[in-house]
Image (cartoon, rainbow, N blue to C red; front, side, top):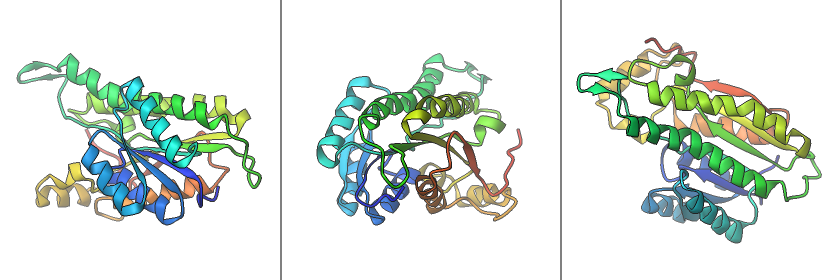
Length: 253
């Protein structure tokens, strides 16, 4: 699918993987709406790329409906949706201060899994109203972001890993459901990337994490995630798949 002239939505578009992907889409000629809970972040990126900033809490139905409506009014119905919104607070199931907070676990599941499902269901309902593209016969594509932690979660990642495992679990049933309508669903499972969350760690810690990656032995560049997202959009035969991008890293416990 050629993105030029098409409308796109990127969640978590104010920073990290989402920002970089939004910039790549805009550079290729897409009309991009940036969804982010942080208004200033979304507005900063939108101003740079000529996109539209939509303040959005992906866990809230009304907020997400309003953001999709704003994006639709500005750019038309989005055929491309890339979901990068997510949080990763570390906590053991039973730590020094006692059991994992249930509120914290619920928050992680709400943002990382329910948020993905919420945006997907609302955006898909819009996409299914469109006519298929003549060139490929497809109506659109939804790219959801999981993590290799879904498969190799470490100590302290119970909430994060289980939320991302849920995202992986959404991939095939949703791709199968939407296949007759020409709407593809693909999941990216990134390894350790140099996002703002990672950049907040000490330089030595970042080097140590990067050294654990077999090749190339470094943290992932968000541009490498964006390149994969752009290829998925372009390659109409990619559907219902979970794609790791991690330098062959297999995380230890």
